Image (cartoon, rainbow, N blue to C red; front, side):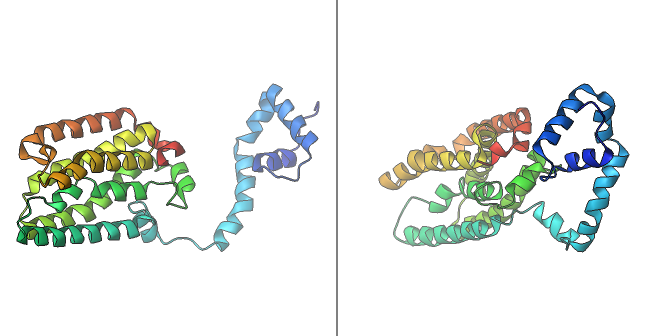
Length: 260
């Protein structure tokens, strides 16, 4: 293309109109590679105003989500509700089984066993491409990334931790036995999720906990050393390492791979 493309053609090209002939698209792109003034015409105000003129009537006629609901979805994923309800049901079931076991002289606390991994399920549901139908839109928004992950994780903890606190009161558990492992596991899921994806990290850590801690504890009817009060410094180190990894890998959550 020796002549400069018209404003109309550039406008259609910038919008990605599918009815532009293939040879015209090729000619425009070839011309733009060698013509700086025409490349500049794609970004200035006239082109933006032309695009906005086409979009504005559509936006006015499209129902908008209320501001309060937009703020709410910034903290809670639509997919997280059923999972949070399930977590509370699991907590209630663990309390009931603990009380039955205590009456029978059992020495294993199911509440203590499941407490570290309960938030992991909610975190995975809050940032999962397979559960959230809007994951691509969310990941592409300016507020996406680690801040959004932290907000949704805080919402999960705001539901799970009070539920576990009530369970501790009902079963006579010391809160310090499960709170630090719970936080360390949650941050560890996010840290590993920055490397392999949150859903994969949640599944891997939950399976590892079930195999290495839950199964032997139930098999031998003896609480694992991992949930002993003397292991609190180790859980604190895991929490600190997880926060460090998150700080170093914070940009990973701006990519869609982090939802896998």
